Amino acid sequence: MILPQPLPRFAALTTLMIATGAIGGFAASQAGLPMPWMLGSLLASALVVLLWAPPMLRDYSFPNPWRSFFIALIGVMIGSQVTPDVLRQAASLPLTLLALLVFIGVAHWGNYLIFRRLGGYDRATAFYSGTPGGLMESIMLGEGAGADVRILTAQQFLRIILVITTIPLALSLWTGTAVGSAAGLTGPAAEPVSPQNLALIALTAGLGLWGGQRLGLPAAQLSGPLILAAAATMTGALDLHLPFWLIATAQLVIGMTLGLRFKGTDGALLRRCLWLSAVSVAYMLILGAVLAVILHALTDLGYLTLLLSFAPGGVSEMSLVALSLAVSPALVSLHHILRIVLTVLLLGWAAKRFGFN
Image (cartoon, rainbow, N blue to C red):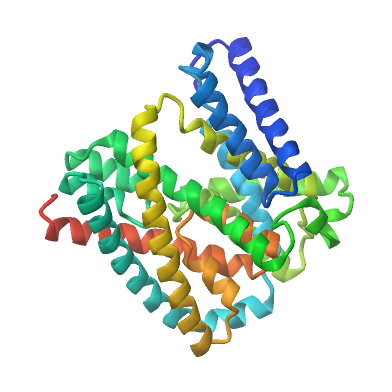
């Protein structure tokens, strides 16, 4: 890994941002907010780069390999939740897969109209801003099609941030407890873990990450460790339950790196993108809720599991929400991985029909 600045300065800035995220996470946990270590660190780091905007952070970026490792830890945690009951629920996949196709097509078309008619974006920018998944692919393809990359990037990241902010808040109001709070974690996550088990967890995360990337798996940083941990758990070879402090640290890093995405963002552009993203996210959440109601009546899957499966957030972030609620996190993760794969596949087909390539 090549560092963008000298090691002492890079280490100091990384320590500063982790400390900023930790302060935000701790404050959010004390305030009883849902998913406090992710949302608190996201808010704290976003405020630093938007309001303070120190010059020393201009050329700083948190190293992607480190972020990938923490996402891999979440994959291990989800994989350790795989049980025979999850495999039985997978029998409903053909029906939910068909519903995913409907969701992607209807969501993308509706988003295109929102960004084109309400936002006044050009065709390419509206089209690629409206994809309900495949963030990096949408940005790369959109740039090649002549879309405004600043708007496209802001809209795609705001989609994820608004979803992972509104869903936990809404579920906290619904359930009456803070989603993902420390108080809500019991069982293995609350028990101490030996250094040997921590080493096994880190090894599983590293091997799963490496294997997933070598095999070209979709969302490899999450899916590779998930598959490896699931295999180890189902065979009884290993006990890979992560302690709460490690889960909170992974949430902190994921939230902090999302907040850093606002670095250098123009205030006026951000405000314009924010209200359009709010309309888009509300539309997609309503669409997902309707499909969840229909599928709940047709399958044996729980409504909350289905609702989280259709929420258009990031794979790792939505998996964390499912994990905190203990609602089939492996199944939710699988649906989000499939959503990204299907979105990218349909994106190529739709782009040809719209004349973008």
